[in-house]
Length: 478
Image (tube, rainbow, N blue to C red):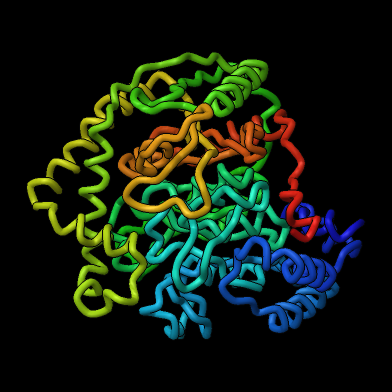
């Protein structure tokens, strides 16, 4: 097996090889390290690496396999988003303000993955305070999409997405308060899961923000499920964590006969790039071929939900960093300054309206899902998003023309943070005209994790996924 093949193994494939003695965790880790050292100057997905420690842990994992004492994710390389605490490592939140901050303990979901045997070999880039659907900051610079260096890998979990697409990690973690797992999943051609609110213990104080989610990112749906099975479950330091423990079954359904699937291309108000449209329609046709009935539906949403989402973010996310505008303004990125200043205009009545907007959205969506098993829509409306895209608006290419729009006009992710109890899994749907992947979102009724995974696993097995490709400028050395 070539190093390139090793670097694109799924966690399930790697574990099978480890168990049979056909591959060592050390071999896999060393292959990833070598690839990281070659590609990182082009992609910039990692903030820090812990390669020496990781190799030592891989040796310990190798011993566990020999002894038969391996854990569920034993020896699997894990890239940790910089927003998460990892004991003994820096957590900068991509900000000059916190460039020297080091944590003494790991966040719950990270510790659970480590306890299951995963090996953290790197931390991954984000925009400052996870504020963008792209991935750049004054501290860490610009993170680029391995498929096309001019395009963003998405954000805020952009480094995790880029590393998975580049083959420099096997699994990764992300956070998602407006799409920050699913945006990079779509743009990087991988899978990313926003679990129902409360399923995974969250980072305080955002554990009490129903928009906020932590979750898994990987190249395969069964890897997402395996990570999710380790991450989920009640924790005594998160009052919002659900007491019910759901174990996702990774058995692939033979077909989807009897399933009813609803879909919307534009959620009622978004412009869709033709490449994204074509890939989405092809994915829907594949689901029909699997036996599902597929119906286009009207969900009655409009552009006003963008303002509602911004208002919600203003009253917790922006408020959490508000004091920095007075104490550390010179250290902040321009987009952070804009976000805080704009959020200061919001009122308590605006916040109430944002909650009422979410209620109105579910007044339409909840009854709709009484009649359907799954809802499908594009994850993003375009892949023409430059790697320096920023707040409040940026030049985005849709159907060959440049639009000056905010990211909520090209991302279909944030509505499902508003409907936070609905599980959402983003899966690849093909390549677009600029060589960048597109994705579709599988959405189920509230707290029905298994239904999302069953549909996605069946789809994934039938879908002819494009092979991961690097921008030719990387291989040519330009």
